[in-house]
Image (cartoon, rainbow, N blue to C red; front, side, top):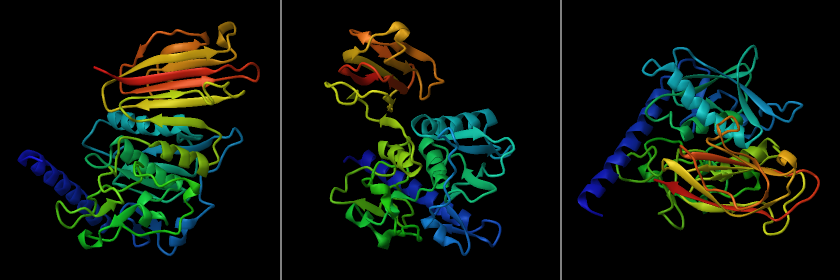
Length: 362
């Protein structure tokens, strides 16, 4: 590592430590004596810490199978930014959750129980009833993954490194910690693997008392990246779907290049299938090409089809409308860093399906 790279790493860890310290100091001045803070950004009403293990504080599911969470944004929530920009950033982050799970964030009208977005960087754990604060703020708590992090607390998720089995995957460096915030819980973990890539995972230097000294180290490989805030991981999606019993077939593809296929390929895909793949990369554009394609042909592709969107939701512009039959198909380029691929089949004929690969386009 050369001198400039070493200085950059020290600067990065210093900034992380300062932001963490500021968060702790801010929480010490939260108004009202009935509010306690747990794990740095989880608000708890005093005397109700057992809510961390609560199984009855999930948002209810409607008859249509959707979990609708009303959201209202405070009009004075951030004086330093245009409100339209704020709403756009929040909407984009929440849209990713709504696209890939049965949890749908909707504008609050007259609902009694709802999420109220205000300035800060915190959230209550699960649904508490009434107006429920979620704090967001520019410079540290407004990245897509940071917004999703706080909203996931409101859905009922703890920090990933607070899992009951965390000591098998990370080492907590207690000697470098400026405050608490690294407790371990008796969690059930939903039967899903530990996720270093979760938006719910702390970064390596969070709450560090000494610049350059990590507070959390992955084991056995300390080089594994942790603490990303670019967006939901694939396991984040799986956890939401399992906790809320969503009947969703959906995946996130966050790497700069990769491939994916229909279920069972090259054998026939299942009947009555409906799956989504969200490609989300760091680079500016996505280049998608078809390696194989064989779907049941039908009039207007009303039976089985592929549909591709230029964005992260079904409300995004369409790059490829419903398409079926047998390839070849043209390559596609998204205008941005996200692309949504939708596949659906009916109850009749099934065929081998498809294989697609993607990379970034300069």
